[in-house]
Image 1 (cartoon, rainbow, N blue to C red):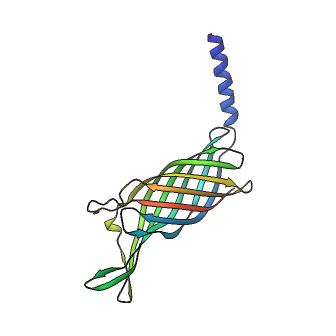
Image 2 (image 1 turned 135 degrees about the vertical axis):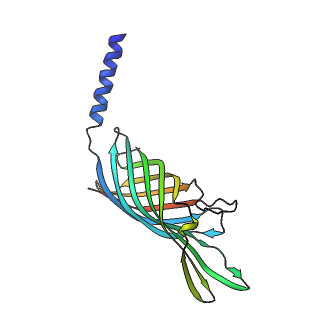
Image 3 (image 1 turned 60 degrees about the horizontal axis):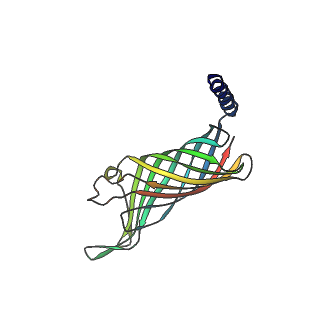
Length: 199
């Protein structure tokens, strides 16, 4: 029995070493965001993301992909608001994050994969914009927002060529981004669609 267990361990160790010989790949990625903020009277806002990644093979079917991305997110107000009887329109919140997702990817086929994992975000800029009496106004409101954001991502990808692929991902925010929310939870939601290129 001990010999059988030893033989099994040797075989499994050999397989693990054989699977880990594939080297990590590095690359860049960029695309479009469709983001919003929950718990508010808002609609989606278009933005962009861009950054770099490392794709690390763990086995023949599982990879881990940490990324560092700049992501422009936020939301727009659905309706106009009134202040002193005057309309405030075109309200928009823009949020700039450095996001660090860590995705576990499952290679369902040689070209198609599924992925899931956490995303750690760090707010670096925030701007609120509106139109009041025909005058566009803009202000920095980073101080009213939390610096750290945590979310969970779920996505899929397809390799168009050996080095070029397309990726779609949805990230649901789990933390309240507002410091003074008054009981309402304001969480980021973000859908990404873009291209990735590995070297």
